[in-house]
Image 1: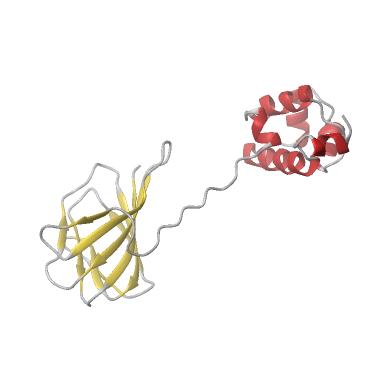
Image 2: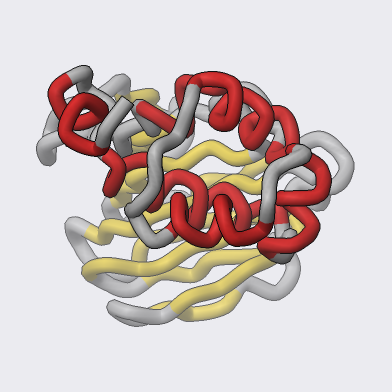
Length: 190
């Protein structure tokens, strides 16, 4: 197959070259090591990563095995998923005891261990949280307003742009000090 045939068939050499470089870096392997594992010449792999050469299905398959990725990732790499949630959208959960709304922005996907929330709070009673599962860490970035955030017995006062991280497996609070306080909360599960 020539380079022109490769491009006509939907697997352009520049896509294959970029995929090989990306996956080799991800694996932390040298050109020589990937070539050895795949049973191809180092010069062949070097040419393929440079976007020249004539890769066969067999060569790409062997490189995929050496890099521990499916063949398809070399010829049609995954595209970044873009998710947009507009202000006021998304599943919102209201507190019973405080003027506090948590809107789930991104649930923890399989093999990841975090959830992302937009927090909207009004002054008044603090949102008191009981300890979560062991190992949970919460990260908060305040967007607007002012708030007391963190451990129940020693919260930190935050202003816009401030960040705090604290163990979520002990009692903690979030209390708005100004109207329309907004924050982003990332709950990290270890």
